[in-house]
Length: 263
Image (cartoon, rainbow, N blue to C red; front, side):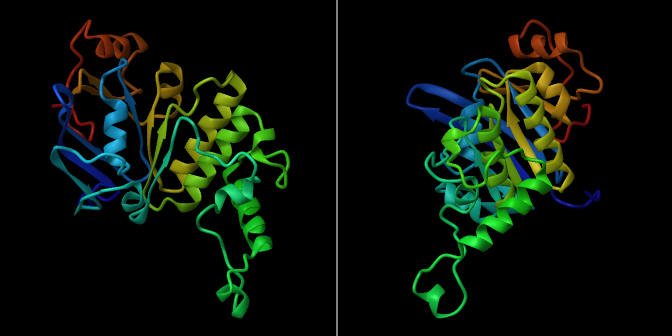
Protein backbone atom coordinates (compact mmCIF):
# COMPACT_ATOMS: atom_id res chain seq x y z
CA UNK A 1 0.00 0.00 0.00
CA UNK A 2 1.29 3.46 -0.89
CA UNK A 3 1.78 5.88 1.98
CA UNK A 4 -1.23 8.00 1.00
CA UNK A 5 -3.57 5.13 0.18
CA UNK A 6 -6.47 4.61 2.61
CA UNK A 7 -6.73 1.31 4.48
CA UNK A 8 -8.99 -1.39 3.09
CA UNK A 9 -11.07 -1.08 6.24
CA UNK A 10 -11.10 1.45 9.07
CA UNK A 11 -13.15 1.12 12.23
CA UNK A 12 -13.15 4.37 14.17
CA UNK A 13 -14.37 4.70 17.76
CA UNK A 14 -16.64 1.65 17.66
CA UNK A 15 -18.79 1.14 20.77
CA UNK A 16 -21.57 -1.38 21.40
CA UNK A 17 -23.83 -2.13 24.35
CA UNK A 18 -26.34 -4.91 24.96
CA UNK A 19 -28.64 -3.60 27.66
CA UNK A 20 -26.51 -2.96 30.72
CA UNK A 21 -23.53 -4.85 29.27
CA UNK A 22 -20.85 -2.90 27.42
CA UNK A 23 -19.28 -5.13 24.75
CA UNK A 24 -17.03 -2.58 23.04
CA UNK A 25 -15.78 0.86 24.02
CA UNK A 26 -14.08 3.20 21.53
CA UNK A 27 -12.35 0.51 19.45
CA UNK A 28 -10.40 1.66 16.38
CA UNK A 29 -8.72 -0.56 13.82
CA UNK A 30 -7.09 -0.13 10.40
CA UNK A 31 -6.40 -2.99 7.99
CA UNK A 32 -4.14 -2.52 4.96
CA UNK A 33 -4.37 -4.41 1.65
CA UNK A 34 -2.64 -7.78 1.85
CA UNK A 35 -2.27 -7.57 5.63
CA UNK A 36 -3.22 -10.29 8.12
CA UNK A 37 -4.44 -8.85 11.41
CA UNK A 38 -5.10 -11.23 14.29
CA UNK A 39 -7.66 -10.35 16.95
CA UNK A 40 -6.88 -11.92 20.30
CA UNK A 41 -8.40 -11.69 23.75
CA UNK A 42 -9.98 -13.73 26.49
CA UNK A 43 -13.62 -14.86 26.33
CA UNK A 44 -15.84 -11.79 26.61
CA UNK A 45 -13.12 -9.43 25.33
CA UNK A 46 -15.36 -8.24 22.49
CA UNK A 47 -13.73 -10.00 19.53
CA UNK A 48 -16.89 -11.64 18.18
CA UNK A 49 -18.92 -8.46 18.64
CA UNK A 50 -16.33 -6.47 16.70
CA UNK A 51 -16.21 -8.85 13.73
CA UNK A 52 -20.00 -9.01 13.65
CA UNK A 53 -19.99 -5.23 13.28
CA UNK A 54 -17.28 -5.33 10.62
CA UNK A 55 -19.20 -8.01 8.69
CA UNK A 56 -22.57 -6.24 8.91
CA UNK A 57 -24.25 -8.69 11.29
CA UNK A 58 -24.49 -5.98 13.99
CA UNK A 59 -24.62 -2.20 13.87
CA UNK A 60 -22.51 -0.18 16.32
CA UNK A 61 -24.06 2.25 18.79
CA UNK A 62 -21.27 4.73 18.10
CA UNK A 63 -18.40 4.98 15.65
CA UNK A 64 -17.79 4.80 11.92
CA UNK A 65 -16.75 2.19 9.38
CA UNK A 66 -14.83 3.21 6.26
CA UNK A 67 -13.92 1.08 3.25
CA UNK A 68 -11.07 2.55 1.21
CA UNK A 69 -11.70 5.84 3.01
CA UNK A 70 -15.41 5.98 2.19
CA UNK A 71 -17.82 5.94 5.09
CA UNK A 72 -20.13 2.91 5.07
CA UNK A 73 -23.18 1.93 7.11
CA UNK A 74 -23.78 -1.82 7.15
CA UNK A 75 -27.27 -2.97 8.08
CA UNK A 76 -26.74 -6.61 7.08
CA UNK A 77 -23.97 -8.97 5.90
CA UNK A 78 -25.11 -8.40 2.32
CA UNK A 79 -24.06 -4.74 2.66
CA UNK A 80 -20.55 -5.83 3.64
CA UNK A 81 -20.41 -8.39 0.83
CA UNK A 82 -21.44 -5.72 -1.66
CA UNK A 83 -18.22 -3.79 -0.94
CA UNK A 84 -16.00 -6.87 -1.04
CA UNK A 85 -15.96 -8.07 2.58
CA UNK A 86 -16.55 -11.80 3.12
CA UNK A 87 -16.75 -13.73 6.39
CA UNK A 88 -15.85 -17.33 7.27
CA UNK A 89 -17.85 -18.18 10.38
CA UNK A 90 -16.78 -20.76 12.93
CA UNK A 91 -19.59 -23.11 11.86
CA UNK A 92 -18.45 -22.60 8.22
CA UNK A 93 -22.09 -22.29 6.98
CA UNK A 94 -21.58 -24.88 4.25
CA UNK A 95 -24.41 -26.75 2.55
CA UNK A 96 -23.41 -30.28 3.55
CA UNK A 97 -25.24 -32.10 0.77
CA UNK A 98 -23.72 -29.98 -2.01
CA UNK A 99 -20.33 -30.37 -3.68
CA UNK A 100 -17.41 -27.98 -3.21
CA UNK A 101 -18.11 -26.12 -6.50
CA UNK A 102 -21.81 -25.82 -5.64
CA UNK A 103 -20.90 -24.36 -2.25
CA UNK A 104 -18.51 -21.84 -3.80
CA UNK A 105 -21.25 -20.49 -6.07
CA UNK A 106 -24.22 -20.95 -3.73
CA UNK A 107 -26.49 -17.92 -4.17
CA UNK A 108 -24.23 -16.57 -6.92
CA UNK A 109 -24.68 -19.25 -9.54
CA UNK A 110 -23.58 -18.79 -13.16
CA UNK A 111 -26.39 -19.07 -15.68
CA UNK A 112 -26.11 -20.24 -19.25
CA UNK A 113 -25.88 -17.62 -21.97
CA UNK A 114 -28.87 -16.57 -24.04
CA UNK A 115 -32.44 -17.75 -23.67
CA UNK A 116 -31.49 -20.67 -21.40
CA UNK A 117 -29.98 -18.31 -18.88
CA UNK A 118 -33.10 -16.14 -18.92
CA UNK A 119 -35.08 -19.28 -18.14
CA UNK A 120 -32.87 -19.90 -15.10
CA UNK A 121 -30.78 -22.78 -16.44
CA UNK A 122 -27.46 -22.98 -14.54
CA UNK A 123 -24.09 -23.36 -16.22
CA UNK A 124 -22.93 -26.24 -14.02
CA UNK A 125 -19.85 -27.08 -16.11
CA UNK A 126 -18.57 -23.51 -15.97
CA UNK A 127 -19.06 -23.32 -12.20
CA UNK A 128 -17.24 -26.62 -11.69
CA UNK A 129 -14.38 -25.56 -13.98
CA UNK A 130 -14.01 -22.17 -12.30
CA UNK A 131 -14.20 -23.70 -8.82
CA UNK A 132 -11.56 -26.34 -9.62
CA UNK A 133 -9.21 -23.72 -11.10
CA UNK A 134 -9.60 -21.42 -8.12
CA UNK A 135 -9.20 -24.15 -5.51
CA UNK A 136 -6.02 -25.34 -7.21
CA UNK A 137 -4.67 -21.79 -7.41
CA UNK A 138 -5.30 -21.34 -3.71
CA UNK A 139 -3.72 -24.69 -2.95
CA UNK A 140 -6.89 -26.01 -1.31
CA UNK A 141 -7.07 -29.80 -1.03
CA UNK A 142 -10.40 -31.23 -2.17
CA UNK A 143 -10.57 -35.03 -2.51
CA UNK A 144 -13.55 -35.17 -4.89
CA UNK A 145 -15.15 -32.23 -6.66
CA UNK A 146 -18.42 -34.10 -7.08
CA UNK A 147 -18.77 -35.44 -3.53
CA UNK A 148 -20.91 -33.66 -0.93
CA UNK A 149 -18.78 -31.67 1.51
CA UNK A 150 -20.22 -33.63 4.44
CA UNK A 151 -17.82 -36.37 3.33
CA UNK A 152 -14.80 -34.08 3.78
CA UNK A 153 -12.48 -33.81 6.76
CA UNK A 154 -12.52 -30.75 8.99
CA UNK A 155 -9.53 -29.20 7.23
CA UNK A 156 -10.99 -29.87 3.79
CA UNK A 157 -14.29 -28.27 4.79
CA UNK A 158 -12.40 -25.28 6.16
CA UNK A 159 -10.55 -25.03 2.84
CA UNK A 160 -13.84 -24.88 0.95
CA UNK A 161 -15.20 -22.19 3.27
CA UNK A 162 -12.05 -20.08 2.91
CA UNK A 163 -12.03 -20.58 -0.85
CA UNK A 164 -15.69 -19.50 -1.07
CA UNK A 165 -14.84 -16.29 0.75
CA UNK A 166 -11.69 -15.78 -1.29
CA UNK A 167 -13.36 -16.16 -4.66
CA UNK A 168 -15.79 -13.33 -3.88
CA UNK A 169 -13.79 -11.05 -1.56
CA UNK A 170 -12.35 -7.96 -3.23
CA UNK A 171 -11.08 -6.26 -0.09
CA UNK A 172 -11.17 -8.30 3.10
CA UNK A 173 -11.87 -11.75 4.54
CA UNK A 174 -12.86 -12.10 8.19
CA UNK A 175 -12.23 -15.52 9.79
CA UNK A 176 -13.63 -16.61 13.15
CA UNK A 177 -11.46 -19.31 14.79
CA UNK A 178 -10.52 -21.00 11.49
CA UNK A 179 -8.45 -23.72 13.19
CA UNK A 180 -10.84 -24.66 15.99
CA UNK A 181 -10.88 -28.45 16.49
CA UNK A 182 -8.32 -29.02 13.71
CA UNK A 183 -5.19 -31.13 14.02
CA UNK A 184 -1.65 -29.93 13.34
CA UNK A 185 -1.60 -30.92 9.66
CA UNK A 186 -4.99 -29.35 8.97
CA UNK A 187 -4.02 -26.20 10.87
CA UNK A 188 -0.94 -25.84 8.68
CA UNK A 189 -3.12 -26.21 5.57
CA UNK A 190 -5.36 -23.38 6.79
CA UNK A 191 -2.28 -21.25 7.53
CA UNK A 192 -1.07 -21.74 3.97
CA UNK A 193 -4.48 -20.77 2.59
CA UNK A 194 -4.42 -17.55 4.61
CA UNK A 195 -0.92 -16.71 3.37
CA UNK A 196 -1.89 -17.32 -0.25
CA UNK A 197 -4.95 -15.11 0.23
CA UNK A 198 -2.73 -12.35 1.64
CA UNK A 199 -0.32 -12.75 -1.29
CA UNK A 200 -3.21 -12.00 -3.66
CA UNK A 201 -3.58 -8.60 -1.99
CA UNK A 202 -6.67 -9.50 0.02
CA UNK A 203 -6.62 -8.35 3.66
CA UNK A 204 -7.49 -10.87 6.38
CA UNK A 205 -8.78 -10.42 9.93
CA UNK A 206 -8.56 -13.62 11.93
CA UNK A 207 -9.80 -14.38 15.43
CA UNK A 208 -7.77 -17.08 17.15
CA UNK A 209 -6.88 -18.28 20.63
CA UNK A 210 -3.82 -20.11 19.29
CA UNK A 211 -0.68 -18.05 19.89
CA UNK A 212 1.55 -20.27 17.67
CA UNK A 213 -0.95 -20.06 14.79
CA UNK A 214 -1.21 -16.28 15.12
CA UNK A 215 2.59 -15.91 15.16
CA UNK A 216 2.73 -17.98 11.97
CA UNK A 217 0.17 -16.05 9.89
CA UNK A 218 -0.27 -12.54 11.32
CA UNK A 219 1.49 -9.34 10.35
CA UNK A 220 -0.01 -7.60 13.37
CA UNK A 221 -1.78 -8.68 16.55
CA UNK A 222 -4.54 -6.58 18.13
CA UNK A 223 -5.44 -7.56 21.69
CA UNK A 224 -8.83 -6.67 23.15
CA UNK A 225 -9.51 -6.82 26.87
CA UNK A 226 -12.95 -6.13 28.39
CA UNK A 227 -14.13 -4.50 25.17
CA UNK A 228 -11.26 -2.03 24.82
CA UNK A 229 -7.98 -2.10 22.85
CA UNK A 230 -5.23 -3.38 25.16
CA UNK A 231 -2.29 -3.57 22.75
CA UNK A 232 -1.24 -3.72 19.11
CA UNK A 233 1.86 -5.87 18.71
CA UNK A 234 4.12 -7.26 16.01
CA UNK A 235 4.90 -11.00 15.97
CA UNK A 236 8.42 -10.07 14.85
CA UNK A 237 9.21 -8.19 18.07
CA UNK A 238 6.84 -9.77 20.60
CA UNK A 239 7.18 -12.97 22.62
CA UNK A 240 4.45 -15.49 23.35
CA UNK A 241 4.61 -14.50 27.02
CA UNK A 242 4.03 -10.82 26.15
CA UNK A 243 0.92 -11.74 24.15
CA UNK A 244 -0.46 -13.76 27.05
CA UNK A 245 0.33 -10.89 29.42
CA UNK A 246 -1.51 -8.42 27.19
CA UNK A 247 -4.54 -10.74 27.02
CA UNK A 248 -4.70 -11.32 30.77
CA UNK A 249 -3.63 -7.87 31.89
CA UNK A 250 -0.66 -9.28 33.80
CA UNK A 251 1.58 -6.63 32.22
CA UNK A 252 1.13 -3.45 30.22
CA UNK A 253 2.26 -3.92 26.64
CA UNK A 254 3.67 -0.98 24.68
CA UNK A 255 0.69 0.72 22.99
CA UNK A 256 0.51 1.35 19.28
CA UNK A 257 -1.77 3.19 16.92
CA UNK A 258 -4.26 1.27 14.71
CA UNK A 259 -1.65 0.87 11.95
CA UNK A 260 0.82 -0.72 14.35
CA UNK A 261 3.21 2.23 14.80
CA UNK A 262 4.70 2.68 18.23
CA UNK A 263 3.16 5.57 20.13
